[in-house]
Image 1 (cartoon, helix red, strand yellow):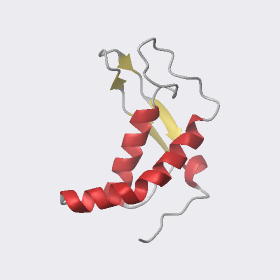
Image 2: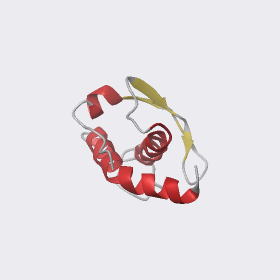
Image 3: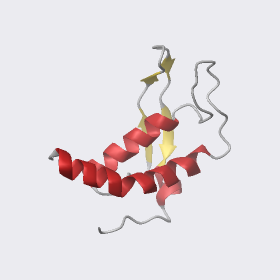
Image 4: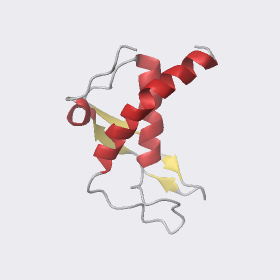
Length: 98
């Protein structure tokens, strides 16, 4: 996939990804790390990037439960993987055709 095509797909999917991840974040506590640079829950940005990459590559939402990969914070501290049930987050959402 060329860079222009990927950029167009990312722009198309980003608002929907942000909606899905915001729904996932409801009632989750902010990242407890004193080094956190936002009030988003731990895993928020990993999930955002993972879901955007998935949509660009596959053109559809993931189905079922997927484990988000482990991550590292900006100081190299390990952040554990976590499950996400995409059926509950995306069952009422549709991807636009353009």
